[in-house]
Image (cartoon, rainbow, N blue to C red):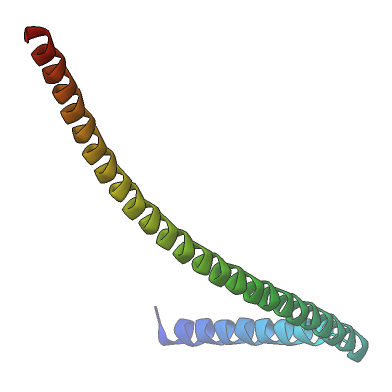
Length: 122
């Protein structure tokens, strides 16, 4: 390419770029919202923000209620665990007592049998 062609090409590119920028500027200017539209947008944002805050407060209250419920259930669970331990100890004591009673019954049966056998032989 000659220097003249390059200059001409650069000039064409520059003018195309300039036209593009002008079109973008015009499009941007015509697309800008009016004050009324901006006000409506702000009102919408305020409403959404208010709804979000209200929902956040509602969720915070629900969370507090859930925490209280969890705490109550934890206390109840601890109480039930203590009851189970107490009942297990009582059960073990009763099993021991039952085993002792069975042994005594077995001994009494043996003694009665021996007495019966002894009385028959004499």
